[in-house]
Length: 153
Length: 124
Image (tube, rainbow over all chains, first blue to last red; front, side, top):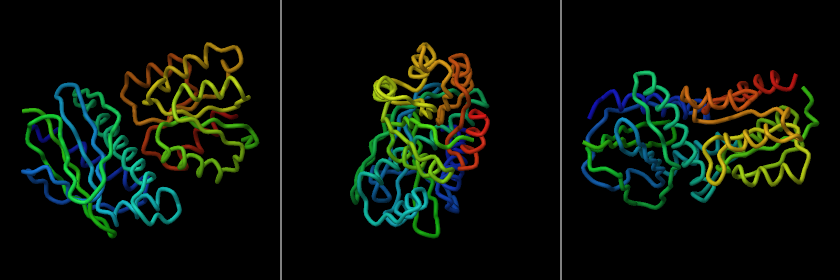
């Protein structure tokens, strides 16, 4: 997979979390993920079409997303519920939007679908293509999250 | 900036409506109405007098761009300020929105200051 497709998603993730939730985010080393098991408790998944077809997903540990959404709303969130799921969908949407703007600047134009959200321990993430799944772990002071980027071969 | 006006917030994500409501309340706006897509927003516009529309772009049923075009074709709302707040900010999107008569454009993610600055401009 072209690494130029990955970096815009990393940049967008950091910017969205810092701008909307005032959370300092540190990116770890990308790796190739071999299975479909989510590294966390709630995932937003979004399909992309354009110069390549694929999906991105964003999976949060419970503690991490509760902190993120608490900061976004200015009130304390204590459990995974429909409000948290909605927020994960919108975060995924914003990460996709910013990454697509950066990709457009290098001539790669994508359209995005409306995101879907999956919750539960050890849930599976279904990417829409069979290409390699590149996972990028992120850490915050209040837990971790992972994005996965998967484009067709 | 007149904060007594009635504002319609349109977004399919409750999260974004909540964030925008919080920002608007901090700015002093109290008269806030919500819709979760363009169709619901249009129904509200037919039944109430709205002074400012803040809308997402990418929504089911009726998009923000389709809503903007209906608003601008309406005798009642053709001059009503319309702020697009969206993650859809590729060049073609912005061109289409400007051509359709959008008053201003805020790209997600955004700060409260960005919303405040744009409102100051379009509500002068």
